[in-house]
Every structure is written in structure tokens, then in C-alpha cells.
Image (cartoon, rainbow, N blue to C red; front, side, top):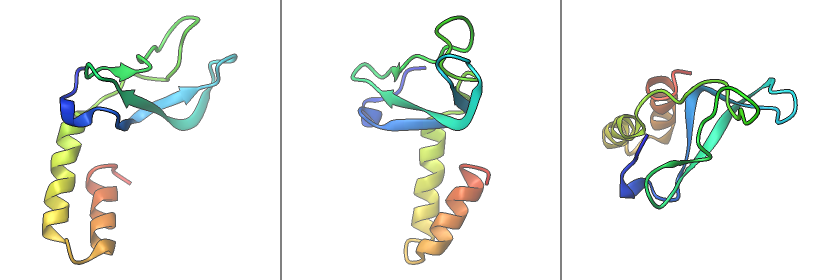
Length: 95
């Protein structure tokens, strides 16, 4: 997965992609956090099998798609922070 320059240095989490315990490889129940590097790649690289496993599943979804949804919600409810938060949780994170 390669991301644009505007994502440089940002951290990203993906629904359904959890971190694993480094010894037991058990799902921690916490979303894996990735950093976008200077070349648009994720760090660490998601690994779902073997001795270097670091997450439960490959990241799904397009972060740029999520950003577009957030921008539309902000434009719609810019004067009501509660509605912005509610809609972002429902439409982007499906909570």
C-alpha cells in the first residue's frame, strides 16, 4: 500500500487489523498503529504469518477514502462538534 505525500508522518489504524503479542502472537484486541514513511509506505510492514507476525489481518480500506468522508462531515457540521464526532464514528469507523 502506497500513500501520497500528504500522509507523511501520520499514524493510521485500520478496522479489523489488530496488533499481536510479540511472543504468543495472540490478538491483543487493540488496533495496530502504522506510520506513513517518507516514501509513502507503512511502517512497520503488516505481517500476518510466521515468526515476525505483527498484526492479525492485512489492512483493508483506503485511508484517502476515509479522509474524504471526514472532510464532507466537517463541511456539513462545522459548527456542531458533537455531530461531527458522531458522524465520524458512525461513517468512518462504523462504531
